[in-house]
Length: 140
Length: 104
Image (cartoon, rainbow over all chains, first blue to last red):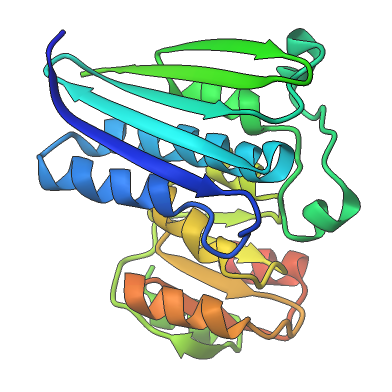
């Protein structure tokens, strides 16, 4: 599929206040080009979860969004500590977040499950000590 | 339900009032659970008061936030709700009591 729009964001790992800005910008862009509300909600929520994960677990990373005629691809890449057991991490309620993170309302163990729930396909590649790449696809 | 009806039923103070209609109620504090379960257009009852609450409300298309148990909103939360047109109320009621009043 040929790409119509490409968006790139650096996600700051130190900043819990501005986290979510990339997802909000993507949401605005999708709205401005007339994408349906249902798809916008799915992309926004799944990408926000990815952004939060990068801030909490990986000291930030980068997000790339490709908008094509028949779909949207969101790629979230970090060079953090990686995920040792992806099956375990995919279970609802499993979390390695600290109490400090939980006090902010994060760390419910719903991040990856929500990303899977709201995307049409999801791929995770992760290596302990090297980082994680999550690719989310949404059909249009 | 209108936001003014919500305000009256909860004896709430309004920090930000928007005229978006209220369609449903959700209560919870873990942000991912809220994003996963809250119906769009709803009023969200919570005790979380940081700016990420507004971020989640925007992305999950939540029209109003009520801070329960007398929790005071963070200044950044007020600013972001104002900028995004999300109603922000505070009530001394606990979350359970607030749900009962909205459900009755």
